[in-house]
Length: 487
Image (tube, rainbow, N blue to C red; front, side, top):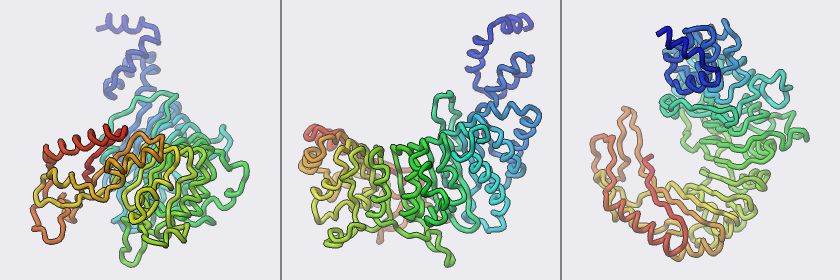
Protein backbone atom coordinates (compact mmCIF):
# COMPACT_ATOMS: atom_id res chain seq x y z
CA UNK A 1 0.00 0.00 0.00
CA UNK A 2 2.85 2.40 0.89
CA UNK A 3 4.52 1.61 -2.43
CA UNK A 4 1.30 2.42 -4.29
CA UNK A 5 0.95 5.69 -2.40
CA UNK A 6 4.55 6.63 -3.20
CA UNK A 7 3.97 5.86 -6.88
CA UNK A 8 0.84 7.96 -6.84
CA UNK A 9 2.59 10.89 -5.20
CA UNK A 10 5.41 10.69 -7.74
CA UNK A 11 2.94 11.74 -10.44
CA UNK A 12 2.85 15.43 -11.42
CA UNK A 13 -0.07 17.55 -10.21
CA UNK A 14 -1.62 17.62 -13.69
CA UNK A 15 -2.03 13.82 -13.73
CA UNK A 16 -3.22 13.73 -10.13
CA UNK A 17 -5.89 16.32 -10.90
CA UNK A 18 -7.03 14.28 -13.91
CA UNK A 19 -7.43 11.26 -11.64
CA UNK A 20 -9.18 13.20 -8.88
CA UNK A 21 -11.65 14.67 -11.36
CA UNK A 22 -12.91 11.17 -12.14
CA UNK A 23 -13.70 10.44 -8.48
CA UNK A 24 -17.39 11.33 -8.08
CA UNK A 25 -18.18 10.01 -4.60
CA UNK A 26 -17.73 12.70 -1.93
CA UNK A 27 -16.78 10.16 0.75
CA UNK A 28 -13.97 8.83 -1.48
CA UNK A 29 -12.76 12.38 -2.08
CA UNK A 30 -12.70 13.06 1.68
CA UNK A 31 -10.70 9.87 2.28
CA UNK A 32 -8.24 10.89 -0.42
CA UNK A 33 -7.89 14.38 1.07
CA UNK A 34 -7.00 12.88 4.47
CA UNK A 35 -4.03 11.01 2.99
CA UNK A 36 -1.49 13.84 3.07
CA UNK A 37 -1.17 17.63 2.84
CA UNK A 38 -0.36 17.55 -0.88
CA UNK A 39 -3.45 15.54 -1.83
CA UNK A 40 -5.54 17.59 0.58
CA UNK A 41 -4.67 20.75 -1.32
CA UNK A 42 -5.52 19.14 -4.64
CA UNK A 43 -8.71 17.38 -3.55
CA UNK A 44 -10.48 20.05 -1.48
CA UNK A 45 -11.61 22.17 -4.47
CA UNK A 46 -13.45 19.09 -5.78
CA UNK A 47 -15.08 18.43 -2.40
CA UNK A 48 -16.42 21.96 -2.06
CA UNK A 49 -17.25 22.81 -5.68
CA UNK A 50 -20.78 21.38 -5.43
CA UNK A 51 -22.63 21.72 -2.12
CA UNK A 52 -26.13 20.38 -1.46
CA UNK A 53 -27.85 21.25 1.83
CA UNK A 54 -31.03 19.42 2.79
CA UNK A 55 -30.79 19.86 6.57
CA UNK A 56 -29.94 22.87 8.70
CA UNK A 57 -27.21 20.90 10.44
CA UNK A 58 -25.37 20.64 7.12
CA UNK A 59 -25.38 24.44 6.82
CA UNK A 60 -23.87 24.64 10.31
CA UNK A 61 -21.18 22.10 9.35
CA UNK A 62 -20.35 24.08 6.22
CA UNK A 63 -20.10 27.31 8.20
CA UNK A 64 -17.69 25.68 10.66
CA UNK A 65 -15.54 24.29 7.84
CA UNK A 66 -15.32 27.71 6.18
CA UNK A 67 -14.57 29.30 9.54
CA UNK A 68 -11.54 27.02 9.97
CA UNK A 69 -10.34 27.69 6.42
CA UNK A 70 -12.02 30.71 4.69
CA UNK A 71 -10.49 29.81 1.30
CA UNK A 72 -12.97 26.91 1.09
CA UNK A 73 -15.75 29.41 0.36
CA UNK A 74 -13.93 30.43 -2.83
CA UNK A 75 -13.94 26.83 -4.05
CA UNK A 76 -17.74 26.60 -4.07
CA UNK A 77 -19.19 26.91 -7.58
CA UNK A 78 -22.62 25.38 -6.99
CA UNK A 79 -24.89 25.61 -3.94
CA UNK A 80 -28.31 24.05 -3.43
CA UNK A 81 -30.14 24.62 -0.14
CA UNK A 82 -33.57 23.02 0.17
CA UNK A 83 -34.70 22.23 3.72
CA UNK A 84 -37.95 21.23 5.40
CA UNK A 85 -39.37 22.92 8.48
CA UNK A 86 -38.70 20.02 10.81
CA UNK A 87 -34.96 19.77 9.95
CA UNK A 88 -34.13 23.45 9.44
CA UNK A 89 -32.29 24.17 12.69
CA UNK A 90 -28.90 25.64 11.78
CA UNK A 91 -29.92 27.03 8.38
CA UNK A 92 -29.56 30.56 9.76
CA UNK A 93 -25.78 30.13 9.50
CA UNK A 94 -25.91 29.89 5.71
CA UNK A 95 -26.09 33.61 4.74
CA UNK A 96 -22.73 34.41 6.34
CA UNK A 97 -21.16 31.56 4.32
CA UNK A 98 -22.93 32.64 1.13
CA UNK A 99 -21.52 36.15 1.37
CA UNK A 100 -18.00 34.68 1.16
CA UNK A 101 -18.64 32.60 -2.00
CA UNK A 102 -17.09 35.00 -4.50
CA UNK A 103 -16.82 32.35 -7.23
CA UNK A 104 -20.35 31.00 -6.92
CA UNK A 105 -22.10 30.44 -10.26
CA UNK A 106 -24.98 28.12 -9.42
CA UNK A 107 -27.19 29.26 -6.54
CA UNK A 108 -30.32 27.45 -5.40
CA UNK A 109 -32.09 28.70 -2.25
CA UNK A 110 -35.49 27.31 -1.34
CA UNK A 111 -37.63 27.76 1.69
CA UNK A 112 -40.27 25.19 2.71
CA UNK A 113 -43.77 25.44 1.31
CA UNK A 114 -45.17 28.26 3.45
CA UNK A 115 -48.50 28.75 1.70
CA UNK A 116 -50.32 26.83 4.42
CA UNK A 117 -48.32 28.28 7.34
CA UNK A 118 -49.33 31.10 9.65
CA UNK A 119 -47.38 34.39 9.71
CA UNK A 120 -45.84 33.33 13.03
CA UNK A 121 -44.52 30.12 11.48
CA UNK A 122 -43.01 32.10 8.62
CA UNK A 123 -41.23 34.65 10.78
CA UNK A 124 -37.86 32.86 11.00
CA UNK A 125 -37.79 32.39 7.22
CA UNK A 126 -38.70 36.03 6.60
CA UNK A 127 -35.76 37.10 8.77
CA UNK A 128 -33.48 34.70 6.93
CA UNK A 129 -34.63 36.13 3.60
CA UNK A 130 -33.87 39.66 4.79
CA UNK A 131 -30.26 38.58 5.15
CA UNK A 132 -30.30 37.20 1.61
CA UNK A 133 -31.80 40.50 0.40
CA UNK A 134 -28.79 42.39 1.72
CA UNK A 135 -26.44 39.99 -0.09
CA UNK A 136 -28.27 40.62 -3.38
CA UNK A 137 -28.12 44.36 -2.81
CA UNK A 138 -24.35 44.04 -2.39
CA UNK A 139 -24.17 42.11 -5.67
CA UNK A 140 -25.81 44.60 -8.03
CA UNK A 141 -24.23 46.59 -10.83
CA UNK A 142 -24.20 49.62 -8.52
CA UNK A 143 -21.54 48.03 -6.28
CA UNK A 144 -17.86 48.16 -7.39
CA UNK A 145 -16.48 44.76 -8.37
CA UNK A 146 -14.00 44.67 -5.51
CA UNK A 147 -16.89 44.97 -3.05
CA UNK A 148 -19.43 42.96 -5.05
CA UNK A 149 -20.31 39.74 -3.22
CA UNK A 150 -21.70 37.44 -5.95
CA UNK A 151 -20.09 38.96 -9.01
CA UNK A 152 -19.67 35.58 -10.79
CA UNK A 153 -23.32 34.47 -10.60
CA UNK A 154 -24.68 33.59 -14.04
CA UNK A 155 -28.24 32.31 -13.67
CA UNK A 156 -30.84 32.74 -10.99
CA UNK A 157 -34.44 31.64 -10.43
CA UNK A 158 -37.19 32.24 -7.89
CA UNK A 159 -39.15 29.00 -7.95
CA UNK A 160 -42.31 27.68 -6.35
CA UNK A 161 -41.75 24.91 -3.83
CA UNK A 162 -43.59 22.38 -5.99
CA UNK A 163 -40.37 21.98 -7.98
CA UNK A 164 -38.33 20.90 -4.96
CA UNK A 165 -38.84 17.19 -5.70
CA UNK A 166 -37.18 17.65 -9.09
CA UNK A 167 -34.33 19.69 -7.70
CA UNK A 168 -33.68 17.42 -4.73
CA UNK A 169 -33.25 14.40 -6.97
CA UNK A 170 -31.24 16.11 -9.67
CA UNK A 171 -27.81 14.71 -10.36
CA UNK A 172 -24.77 16.78 -9.63
CA UNK A 173 -23.51 18.74 -12.61
CA UNK A 174 -19.85 18.90 -13.47
CA UNK A 175 -19.13 22.60 -14.04
CA UNK A 176 -16.51 24.46 -16.02
CA UNK A 177 -15.58 28.10 -15.54
CA UNK A 178 -16.76 29.16 -18.99
CA UNK A 179 -20.24 27.67 -18.57
CA UNK A 180 -23.28 29.65 -17.49
CA UNK A 181 -24.48 27.78 -14.42
CA UNK A 182 -28.04 27.51 -13.20
CA UNK A 183 -29.26 29.19 -10.02
CA UNK A 184 -32.50 28.82 -8.12
CA UNK A 185 -34.16 31.01 -5.50
CA UNK A 186 -37.48 30.41 -3.79
CA UNK A 187 -38.82 32.77 -1.14
CA UNK A 188 -41.98 33.27 0.85
CA UNK A 189 -44.16 36.24 1.74
CA UNK A 190 -45.40 37.12 5.20
CA UNK A 191 -49.02 36.31 4.34
CA UNK A 192 -49.83 35.24 0.81
CA UNK A 193 -48.82 32.78 -1.86
CA UNK A 194 -47.25 35.47 -4.05
CA UNK A 195 -44.10 37.24 -2.86
CA UNK A 196 -43.17 40.83 -3.68
CA UNK A 197 -40.37 41.49 -6.15
CA UNK A 198 -39.60 44.97 -4.86
CA UNK A 199 -37.41 43.48 -2.10
CA UNK A 200 -35.36 41.55 -4.64
CA UNK A 201 -35.20 44.15 -7.41
CA UNK A 202 -31.40 44.20 -7.17
CA UNK A 203 -31.42 40.90 -9.06
CA UNK A 204 -32.44 42.86 -12.18
CA UNK A 205 -29.29 44.97 -11.84
CA UNK A 206 -26.80 42.15 -11.45
CA UNK A 207 -23.61 42.71 -13.50
CA UNK A 208 -23.13 39.10 -14.68
CA UNK A 209 -26.54 37.43 -14.41
CA UNK A 210 -27.53 35.88 -17.75
CA UNK A 211 -30.70 33.98 -16.81
CA UNK A 212 -33.38 34.75 -14.22
CA UNK A 213 -36.45 32.69 -13.38
CA UNK A 214 -39.13 33.87 -10.97
CA UNK A 215 -42.17 31.95 -9.84
CA UNK A 216 -45.24 33.14 -7.96
CA UNK A 217 -44.31 36.78 -7.52
CA UNK A 218 -46.00 40.14 -7.89
CA UNK A 219 -44.26 42.78 -9.98
CA UNK A 220 -45.65 45.48 -7.65
CA UNK A 221 -46.49 48.98 -8.83
CA UNK A 222 -44.04 51.09 -10.84
CA UNK A 223 -43.43 53.58 -8.04
CA UNK A 224 -42.34 50.74 -5.73
CA UNK A 225 -39.90 49.05 -8.10
CA UNK A 226 -36.45 50.69 -8.21
CA UNK A 227 -38.14 54.12 -8.02
CA UNK A 228 -34.94 56.20 -8.00
CA UNK A 229 -33.21 54.22 -10.77
CA UNK A 230 -35.89 53.76 -13.44
CA UNK A 231 -34.86 56.78 -15.50
CA UNK A 232 -31.11 56.60 -14.91
CA UNK A 233 -29.64 56.66 -18.46
CA UNK A 234 -26.54 54.82 -17.27
CA UNK A 235 -28.60 51.78 -16.30
CA UNK A 236 -30.78 51.49 -19.40
CA UNK A 237 -29.55 48.54 -21.47
CA UNK A 238 -26.74 47.94 -19.00
CA UNK A 239 -27.17 44.34 -17.81
CA UNK A 240 -26.22 41.10 -19.64
CA UNK A 241 -29.55 39.39 -18.84
CA UNK A 242 -30.52 37.21 -21.83
CA UNK A 243 -33.16 34.82 -20.50
CA UNK A 244 -36.09 35.80 -18.28
CA UNK A 245 -38.78 33.40 -17.08
CA UNK A 246 -41.76 34.82 -15.14
CA UNK A 247 -43.91 31.89 -14.05
CA UNK A 248 -47.39 32.13 -12.49
CA UNK A 249 -46.82 35.76 -11.57
CA UNK A 250 -49.08 38.75 -11.02
CA UNK A 251 -48.10 41.43 -13.51
CA UNK A 252 -48.35 45.17 -13.72
CA UNK A 253 -47.51 45.96 -17.34
CA UNK A 254 -45.85 49.29 -16.48
CA UNK A 255 -43.58 47.59 -13.97
CA UNK A 256 -42.80 44.90 -16.53
CA UNK A 257 -41.74 47.68 -18.89
CA UNK A 258 -39.36 48.98 -16.20
CA UNK A 259 -37.82 45.52 -15.83
CA UNK A 260 -37.31 45.21 -19.59
CA UNK A 261 -35.43 48.51 -19.77
CA UNK A 262 -32.34 47.15 -18.05
CA UNK A 263 -31.21 44.18 -20.24
CA UNK A 264 -28.94 45.12 -23.11
CA UNK A 265 -30.32 42.39 -25.38
CA UNK A 266 -32.90 39.99 -23.98
CA UNK A 267 -33.08 36.83 -26.13
CA UNK A 268 -35.81 34.72 -24.55
CA UNK A 269 -38.83 35.49 -22.38
CA UNK A 270 -41.39 33.17 -20.79
CA UNK A 271 -44.47 34.69 -19.20
CA UNK A 272 -47.39 33.01 -17.48
CA UNK A 273 -49.91 34.70 -15.23
CA UNK A 274 -50.82 33.25 -11.84
CA UNK A 275 -54.41 32.41 -12.64
CA UNK A 276 -54.43 29.49 -10.20
CA UNK A 277 -54.59 31.85 -7.23
CA UNK A 278 -58.07 32.30 -5.81
CA UNK A 279 -59.24 34.52 -2.93
CA UNK A 280 -58.97 32.73 0.40
CA UNK A 281 -60.62 34.12 3.52
CA UNK A 282 -61.05 37.46 1.78
CA UNK A 283 -57.35 37.74 0.91
CA UNK A 284 -56.54 38.17 -2.80
CA UNK A 285 -53.06 36.90 -3.66
CA UNK A 286 -53.18 38.71 -7.02
CA UNK A 287 -53.65 42.46 -6.77
CA UNK A 288 -53.18 43.43 -10.44
CA UNK A 289 -55.50 40.96 -12.19
CA UNK A 290 -55.06 39.88 -15.79
CA UNK A 291 -52.74 41.96 -17.94
CA UNK A 292 -54.18 43.53 -21.10
CA UNK A 293 -52.58 41.95 -24.20
CA UNK A 294 -51.94 45.30 -25.90
CA UNK A 295 -50.16 46.67 -22.81
CA UNK A 296 -47.99 43.56 -22.74
CA UNK A 297 -46.98 44.10 -26.38
CA UNK A 298 -45.94 47.68 -25.58
CA UNK A 299 -43.69 46.44 -22.77
CA UNK A 300 -42.22 43.67 -24.92
CA UNK A 301 -41.44 46.18 -27.68
CA UNK A 302 -38.53 47.45 -25.56
CA UNK A 303 -36.70 44.23 -26.47
CA UNK A 304 -38.15 43.54 -29.91
CA UNK A 305 -34.85 43.98 -31.75
CA UNK A 306 -33.18 41.16 -29.77
CA UNK A 307 -36.02 38.91 -28.56
CA UNK A 308 -35.74 35.54 -30.34
CA UNK A 309 -37.95 33.26 -28.22
CA UNK A 310 -41.27 34.05 -26.51
CA UNK A 311 -43.65 31.86 -24.52
CA UNK A 312 -46.99 33.27 -23.33
CA UNK A 313 -49.74 31.95 -21.08
CA UNK A 314 -52.00 34.88 -20.23
CA UNK A 315 -55.04 35.01 -18.01
CA UNK A 316 -56.87 37.57 -20.14
CA UNK A 317 -59.99 35.90 -21.61
CA UNK A 318 -60.24 35.67 -25.41
CA UNK A 319 -62.80 38.11 -26.79
CA UNK A 320 -64.92 37.81 -29.88
CA UNK A 321 -66.31 40.20 -32.47
CA UNK A 322 -65.72 43.87 -33.08
CA UNK A 323 -64.21 44.57 -29.66
CA UNK A 324 -60.91 43.15 -30.88
CA UNK A 325 -60.99 45.50 -33.88
CA UNK A 326 -61.79 48.64 -31.93
CA UNK A 327 -59.55 48.21 -28.88
CA UNK A 328 -55.82 47.75 -29.40
CA UNK A 329 -55.39 46.73 -25.75
CA UNK A 330 -57.52 43.61 -26.22
CA UNK A 331 -55.46 41.65 -28.76
CA UNK A 332 -51.88 40.53 -29.34
CA UNK A 333 -50.01 41.87 -32.32
CA UNK A 334 -46.48 40.54 -32.74
CA UNK A 335 -46.08 41.52 -36.39
CA UNK A 336 -43.32 44.05 -35.63
CA UNK A 337 -41.12 41.55 -33.77
CA UNK A 338 -38.82 40.70 -36.66
CA UNK A 339 -36.15 39.02 -34.50
CA UNK A 340 -38.66 36.60 -32.95
CA UNK A 341 -38.07 33.06 -34.25
CA UNK A 342 -39.70 30.78 -31.67
CA UNK A 343 -43.20 31.32 -30.29
CA UNK A 344 -45.05 29.18 -27.73
CA UNK A 345 -48.64 29.78 -26.56
CA UNK A 346 -51.36 27.91 -24.79
CA UNK A 347 -54.63 27.77 -26.69
CA UNK A 348 -56.56 30.63 -24.96
CA UNK A 349 -53.60 32.97 -25.50
CA UNK A 350 -53.47 32.04 -29.18
CA UNK A 351 -57.09 33.22 -29.42
CA UNK A 352 -55.85 36.72 -28.46
CA UNK A 353 -54.08 36.99 -31.82
CA UNK A 354 -57.49 36.90 -33.50
CA UNK A 355 -60.88 35.41 -32.58
CA UNK A 356 -61.54 32.05 -34.18
CA UNK A 357 -64.52 33.57 -36.04
CA UNK A 358 -62.11 35.72 -38.04
CA UNK A 359 -60.38 32.68 -39.50
CA UNK A 360 -56.75 31.63 -39.28
CA UNK A 361 -55.51 34.14 -41.85
CA UNK A 362 -56.13 36.95 -39.38
CA UNK A 363 -53.97 35.30 -36.72
CA UNK A 364 -51.16 34.78 -39.24
CA UNK A 365 -51.16 38.53 -39.99
CA UNK A 366 -50.28 39.21 -36.34
CA UNK A 367 -47.55 36.57 -36.14
CA UNK A 368 -43.85 37.50 -36.09
CA UNK A 369 -42.83 37.70 -39.77
CA UNK A 370 -39.63 35.64 -39.37
CA UNK A 371 -41.12 32.91 -37.18
CA UNK A 372 -39.38 29.53 -37.49
CA UNK A 373 -41.21 27.40 -34.91
CA UNK A 374 -44.68 27.59 -33.35
CA UNK A 375 -45.75 25.56 -30.33
CA UNK A 376 -49.40 25.39 -29.24
CA UNK A 377 -50.11 23.65 -25.96
CA UNK A 378 -53.04 23.23 -23.65
CA UNK A 379 -55.20 21.63 -26.35
CA UNK A 380 -57.91 19.75 -24.47
CA UNK A 381 -58.98 16.27 -25.43
CA UNK A 382 -62.53 16.70 -26.70
CA UNK A 383 -63.78 13.45 -25.17
CA UNK A 384 -63.00 12.20 -21.70
CA UNK A 385 -62.83 8.42 -21.83
CA UNK A 386 -64.55 6.54 -19.05
CA UNK A 387 -61.62 4.16 -18.98
CA UNK A 388 -57.97 5.03 -18.52
CA UNK A 389 -57.12 4.33 -22.16
CA UNK A 390 -57.17 7.13 -24.74
CA UNK A 391 -58.44 5.66 -28.01
CA UNK A 392 -57.64 6.68 -31.61
CA UNK A 393 -61.08 8.26 -32.10
CA UNK A 394 -60.28 10.84 -29.42
CA UNK A 395 -56.90 11.87 -30.82
CA UNK A 396 -58.29 11.77 -34.33
CA UNK A 397 -60.73 14.60 -33.63
CA UNK A 398 -58.72 17.69 -34.66
CA UNK A 399 -61.68 20.02 -35.17
CA UNK A 400 -60.81 23.52 -34.02
CA UNK A 401 -57.07 22.89 -33.67
CA UNK A 402 -55.28 25.84 -35.36
CA UNK A 403 -53.79 25.09 -38.80
CA UNK A 404 -54.01 21.31 -38.31
CA UNK A 405 -55.19 20.57 -41.84
CA UNK A 406 -53.29 20.42 -45.08
CA UNK A 407 -54.86 23.71 -46.21
CA UNK A 408 -54.21 25.42 -42.88
CA UNK A 409 -50.57 24.37 -42.73
CA UNK A 410 -50.00 25.38 -46.34
CA UNK A 411 -51.43 28.83 -45.69
CA UNK A 412 -49.24 29.23 -42.62
CA UNK A 413 -46.18 28.13 -44.59
CA UNK A 414 -46.94 30.52 -47.48
CA UNK A 415 -47.47 33.51 -45.18
CA UNK A 416 -44.54 32.73 -42.89
CA UNK A 417 -41.77 31.66 -45.26
CA UNK A 418 -39.32 30.90 -42.44
CA UNK A 419 -41.70 28.54 -40.61
CA UNK A 420 -40.13 25.11 -40.20
CA UNK A 421 -41.80 23.45 -37.21
CA UNK A 422 -45.21 23.35 -35.51
CA UNK A 423 -45.87 21.48 -32.27
CA UNK A 424 -49.25 20.63 -30.77
CA UNK A 425 -49.61 19.36 -27.22
CA UNK A 426 -52.81 17.93 -25.81
CA UNK A 427 -53.27 18.24 -22.05
CA UNK A 428 -54.76 15.31 -20.24
CA UNK A 429 -55.77 16.87 -16.94
CA UNK A 430 -55.19 15.16 -13.62
CA UNK A 431 -55.80 16.74 -10.23
CA UNK A 432 -54.79 16.13 -6.64
CA UNK A 433 -57.60 15.74 -4.15
CA UNK A 434 -57.11 16.87 -0.57
CA UNK A 435 -56.38 13.31 0.53
CA UNK A 436 -53.33 13.32 -1.71
CA UNK A 437 -54.63 10.69 -4.13
CA UNK A 438 -53.99 11.27 -7.81
CA UNK A 439 -57.21 10.99 -9.80
CA UNK A 440 -58.24 11.72 -13.37
CA UNK A 441 -60.58 14.65 -13.96
CA UNK A 442 -63.92 13.27 -15.13
CA UNK A 443 -66.67 15.17 -16.93
CA UNK A 444 -70.07 15.69 -15.41
CA UNK A 445 -72.23 12.58 -15.46
CA UNK A 446 -69.35 10.10 -15.49
CA UNK A 447 -69.33 7.67 -12.64
CA UNK A 448 -66.58 8.35 -10.10
CA UNK A 449 -63.86 5.73 -10.05
CA UNK A 450 -61.20 4.77 -7.56
CA UNK A 451 -58.09 7.02 -7.47
CA UNK A 452 -55.46 5.91 -9.94
CA UNK A 453 -51.79 6.63 -10.41
CA UNK A 454 -51.23 4.99 -13.80
CA UNK A 455 -52.06 6.29 -17.25
CA UNK A 456 -52.60 4.10 -20.30
CA UNK A 457 -52.27 5.34 -23.88
CA UNK A 458 -53.69 2.94 -26.42
CA UNK A 459 -51.09 1.74 -28.95
CA UNK A 460 -53.47 2.35 -31.82
CA UNK A 461 -53.77 5.99 -30.67
CA UNK A 462 -50.01 6.40 -30.83
CA UNK A 463 -49.96 4.86 -34.31
CA UNK A 464 -52.76 7.22 -35.40
CA UNK A 465 -50.83 10.28 -34.21
CA UNK A 466 -47.71 9.12 -36.06
CA UNK A 467 -49.65 8.57 -39.28
CA UNK A 468 -51.25 12.03 -39.16
CA UNK A 469 -47.94 13.74 -38.42
CA UNK A 470 -46.17 11.93 -41.27
CA UNK A 471 -48.94 12.74 -43.74
CA UNK A 472 -49.06 16.43 -42.92
CA UNK A 473 -45.28 16.78 -42.84
CA UNK A 474 -45.00 15.28 -46.30
CA UNK A 475 -47.77 17.45 -47.74
CA UNK A 476 -46.63 20.76 -46.24
CA UNK A 477 -42.85 20.43 -45.91
CA UNK A 478 -43.02 21.13 -42.18
CA UNK A 479 -41.73 19.33 -39.12
CA UNK A 480 -44.86 18.46 -37.15
CA UNK A 481 -45.03 17.21 -33.58
CA UNK A 482 -48.13 15.92 -31.81
CA UNK A 483 -48.00 14.98 -28.15
CA UNK A 484 -49.89 14.46 -24.90
CA UNK A 485 -48.92 16.15 -21.66
CA UNK A 486 -50.02 14.58 -18.38
CA UNK A 487 -50.85 17.52 -16.14
